[in-house]
Image (cartoon, rainbow, N blue to C red; front, side, top):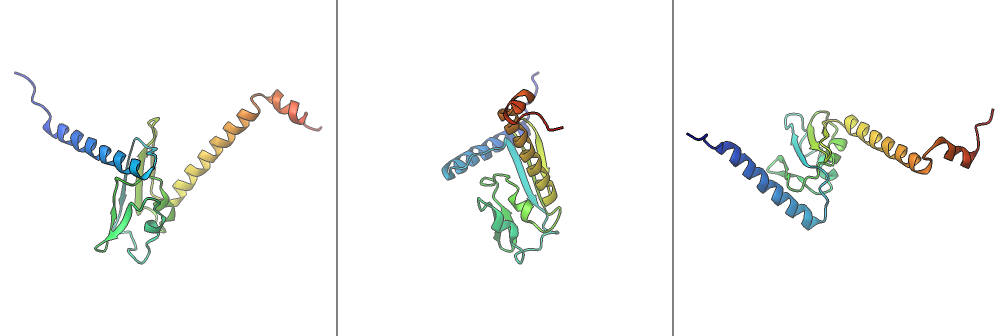
Length: 150
């Protein structure tokens, strides 16, 4: 007797494929590159200040966050998981963004501090790459600027 198919698994996979297809279509029509393999965002409504704050809505570059009937709605098909909402939110641990980079690295953010730390790390990596491109070896640096004065 054969093994029964995992119907729940098949339904989840089909739903994920449909979501991915819609996302590709929407972002493609907007001319936006999808930089992450996977991502999710959720907002803790118990912590949110509500419409009187509105900072995350104003910060979202794709208008993926908006108000409907007094509740924040996140339309994940157009969310690019850029973390602008987290960076601008005045309440720690209110907005949670989780994203997976193409190299498999998982990043999670729920505070402006976490986003700032990532930005600093990325800037540092780019600076090191630029220096290594300009000066592949210490001899290249010395050739250009001479030895350190004693």
